[in-house]
Length: 224
Image (cartoon, rainbow, N blue to C red; front, top):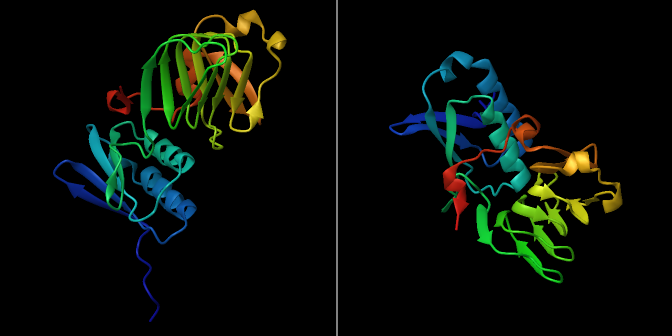
């Protein structure tokens, strides 16, 4: 008699919502495929009120890009709200990375601001100033210096600013075109830069949810 293969994704109901258990021994791509199948094929199960979701990955440490792909699958079910993603002995409160760090101030010429995770800067980045993160960069001010997002290879990272007038942008390993090629029509108002077809493109901020639907704005992702 053949061996019965246990599911790669086990779903359990709890008093607080739903618990998704991901088999740590399977390739993560296989887990994602099984999860996508369950979320798409059992649509009648997911219809209903908002439900808190906890995800346990066992001893598997997932990367930032893997987490974003996981969140993208759940974003198809608007009522399934990811509350936490937990690995053995560690809970991230919904984010496997440090979270969004809020800082206030001006990055002046010659200064370099570095952070692991997503950074929200309340201030300006002057020409000659540099901001580097492993996640995304959000500047509530003028970005006139250099910004490098996704410094460890995260191609889904973005760079956003109230006034996007950089000397240079970098996302993962891709470098933007020279600053004299930026058109005022593209960079006026709140805009963000992102990667598409291995090139950096710029779009209006209100198009962010269409281009990067996996990005979730939640108060518990911000910390001071």
